[in-house]
Every structure is written in structure tokens, then in C-alpha cells.
Amino acid sequence: MTETHLTKHIIHLTLVFFAFISNLTNAEIIPKTHAIAMHGSAKYSAEFKHFDYVNPAAPKGGELRLPVVSGSGFDSLNPFIIKGVPAAGMTYLRQSYLYDSLGVHADDEPFSIYGLIAESMEIPDDRSFITFNLHPQARFQDGQPITAEDVIYTFELLTQQGHPLFSNYYKDVAKVEALNSHSVKFSFSTNKNKELPLILAEMPVLPKHFWQQRDFSKTSLEIPLGSGPYHIESIDPGRSIVYARNPDYWAKDLPVNKGRYNFDRIKFDYYRDENVAIEALKSGEYDLRAENSAKNWASAYTGPQFDSGQLIKVELPDHNPTGMQAFTYNTRRSIFKDPKVREALAYAFDFEWTNQNIFYGAYTRTHSYFSNSDLAATELPSPAELAILEPYKAQLPPEVFTTLYQPPTTKGDGNIRSNIRHALDLLKQAGWQIKNNKLTHLKTGQEMAFEILLVSPTFERVVLPFKKNLARLGIDLTVSTIDPQQYINRINEFNFDMVISVFAQSNSPGNEQRDFWSSTEADRPGSRNIIGIKDPVVDALIEQIISAPDREALVTRTRALDRVLLWSHYVIPQFHSRSYRIAYWNKFERPQVMPKYSLGIDTWWAKP
Image (cartoon, rainbow, N blue to C red; front, side, top):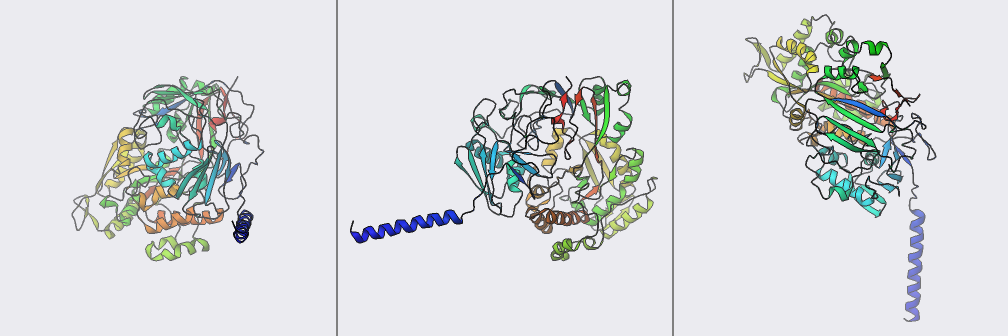
């Protein structure tokens, strides 16, 4: 090499070196964190020892027996696919006895995630990616380590073969890569999806070495390999499933698990009838029951066991958004395409009479898809909401801007003649009129008749008065109660006219709104857009919610979506309760502090 070439080579290396140093200086240094909050900061510091709502000294031991009322039991131990009815206790969101996730949700915060399998996380301010650094001690229940390869395998398995909601939840993930055997980086196609890092952290991690030898897409009763605090001890197909606490659980001493998962065994027994299940509680066949029926709560939980204090009946506050429970239209059906028709039929549901005569006055009428929260549109639109809605004014009902939505009301005395008259006026505007006692479309001659599907006979007492009132409008309603598997299949295939459904909501709405209401999900079998909504305004508002930069913007944008959904008359709102109603045998204790957003059964323990 000549002196000239040597000099040029040295200069080149020097420039490369300084460029490297400059890049290091200018690059964003992302610290590792133990937690992520949706907005603001997480409540618990990196040094926290346990959640405030647990007793860290709670003794381990005993058994918790719980009921499941189901006409067909269960036929699958895979809760991640669209097929089958999975066994109780295998849920993959918030709590699973069998599977650990990358992070865990704190039940006293609206939406914060703390590391579980992920010992730490790295996320830039713009949330354009997230890196999960896996805990070196994380293990599956066969002792094999949980690695980055398992995380990537799980992501691909869920999005390619899992329930459609996974591909929808994670649609903004552009790239997944293993930085090393214990670090995984998820890069996003947008930095507007602020919730995506948190919902990825809720992803369970499945063992590649177990599932790569099996067909993930098929239902199976083979006991799967987990990583969580419990393993499946035994199953009696369709009748019971028993979980046993894993004494070698790798994460039992982590702060997020202190004081939790205290029972040695948890058993779910299946019952086909609500009344039989209540009597089984009284006779001591199981330990705790959450009651959803106001009638049962008022009249069935009596007897010497309650008088003596052996059985405890209590209502505990529920601070979660109660969402929307409603008669739900399938707008894919021609008779329900006109909003005027959907609005008219709401006048046939007499909530006030139902609440007084069937529910002992226990319920509150639902006025919002986000009821029992600050996300609900309970006043006229604010200037900030109007600024969001104004660009779509020509595409929206005028009431969105001028009127607070209220479902039809009655005096509760059973006389709904004024409601019937108003309903008939709306139906006339939509081209329907009563002929020969049948509501008939004036152009097509079609008579209005439809079916409402039920999965439990409990709701028949709500539906039959509604059927009677619809008959006064000349509408023939058929009430069909079918078994759970058939019901699930028909819902997944959108093969129904009307159902009673619950659109559950969290304190931090985000990506799941796509699955509920977006146009892309309207024709996807198994999606939760069972209404069949295809509205570009709704699509745009969903994306604004997902990209909300702070809590204030999230609330404003959610209220705007709430108004649009309500004034489109996609459902007939029903009712909600603001408390947990539970009865249990006096052999348990629970922490003094109850988690704000959960019943917290996983923090209870058996009395010594």
C-alpha cells in the first residue's frame, strides 16, 4: 500500500469512527422499564413488592369449587381458536390459570401492564416498537425455558391459525424479530396505535416444542402444556375440569404474583340449569356463585344456611364500564337495514315495566355503549367532540349534534299505547303499514317476521313481553332457545335475525373497537361485529380512538363514537347493574382492599 493510499485509508476509518460515535450520540437511548401505562405513568414503581389489593402473607392451601351453567359443557382445551367450546379457566385475557403472558394487568389501574414473562420492556416515546426482554427464569411446566423463539412462534400461530380477533388486534405489527434468545422486538407499521404495545404484552406465550407436533386449528381434549400457576389435573369431558397449583411455578415469588393464586386446587363443575346450580350451592356441592339474575338474587338466596352465616350473600361495587347489553339487530337482514325500522322496534321494549315486575327494581337502563364510565356520552357534545364530528356532518343523523340519546321510556304500568303509535308512525315513514293485522311493506308486500335466538331460558321472561308488544305492531316474533354450541356456530356465521348480546368495554378502549364495529370485520366469520356495521364514519372514529395521544383525547373521541352508534339505532339498549352479586360459603377470607376493576377471586384464600 502506498503512503497516499494508507493516508486515505486512515482518513476513511477516522470518518467512519466519528460517524459511528455521532450515531450513538444522536440515537435515542431507551431505558428498560418494568411497566407500561396506557396514559401517564404506572402506579407501581420498579421496587414494588406486591399489588395493594393482595395479602402477601395469604396462606396457600384448600380448594375453590366454582359452577358453570352450560347446556353442552365443553369440548375443547384450546381457547385460542374459533372452533369448539373451551373449558372454564382457560381464558387468555386478564387471567389464565394455565398460561402466563408477557405482562400482567394491574386491577387497580385503568390500563397498565407489568412485566411477567418479560422481565423488562423497552419502548420509545412514539411507541413505534417494543422490545420484550424475557425473564431468564421463565419456564414452561415441563421445565424447558421460555425463549424468544416461543414468543415469535406464538405470534405467528395466533395470527395465522387462531381466532380472527388476533389478526385484527395485531394488524399493525409490521415485523417481529429475535434480537437474541431472550429478547424479542415488535416493530409497528404506525406510531399512532398507542395501545398496541400493551395488548402485545397481554399475549400468552405458547410452547413451540409442544404445538409444532400438533394441529393447532382443531379442537382437542388433550391436556396442553402451560407455563402458569396451575396445571390441569383432570377433566371429566363436559362435566368438570380441575386445576392444581404448581408448587414449582417459576413466577410464584414475583411481585405481580405475591398474594395471588392461593388455592391448591380449583374445580369447575358444569350444570345444565340455573335453579339446579343454586340448590347445589346451598347443599355445599361448590363454594361460590356470582348471580346475574335479579329475580334469583331477590328470592332464591334464602334458607337456614344464609340465616346461620354459613353462606354469605353480598354485593360488592363494580367500577368497570358495564358496556352495552341489548337486543341486537343483524343489519345484514333486509328488514333491519332501515334505521327508522330499528328505531321503531325499540318502542316495543318496556324497560320500566320489566324492571318493576321481573327484576325487583334492581337494574339501571343503559344509555351508552360505555355505561358506568366517563367514556359515556351523557351530555350534549362538547366543542372538542363537535370538532371531531363536524367533518362527517353530511353522513350522520342530525340528532348526533343536537340531542342527547335516550331510549324510549314508559310509566311502567304496562300501558304503552303512545309508544305503539309513535312506532307505527316511524314504520310508516319506512314504508311499512299494518294490513290484515300484519305489518307489511307497501312496495314488496313482505310481512315482518323474525327470530330471536337465546342461549339460556332465563331470558325468555324478558323476551316474551317484548314479543307481545311487537305483536301489537303486527310483527311475528319467534323465540328460539338453543344449545351453546349451536348458538356459537350461528353467531360466528351471522346466521340470525336478532340476539341478546353484551358488548363489554374496558376503561381504555382501543384496538378491540375494530372487532366490534369496523367495516373490515363485518363479513369475517367469528368477528364481534355481529351487527354487520359498515360505516366509514365509524371506521374513522375507531382509528382516532386507537391513536388518541392522551386520556382527555381518548374520552372525547370515545364519546363521539358512542353518539354515532347510539343514533344509528343498531341495538335496543337493555339494562345493567353496578355491583357484583355473589354468594359463598364462609370458609374463605379476602384482602381488606378490593381491586377497583375486578372481583379479585385470585387474591382470596381458604381459612386455615
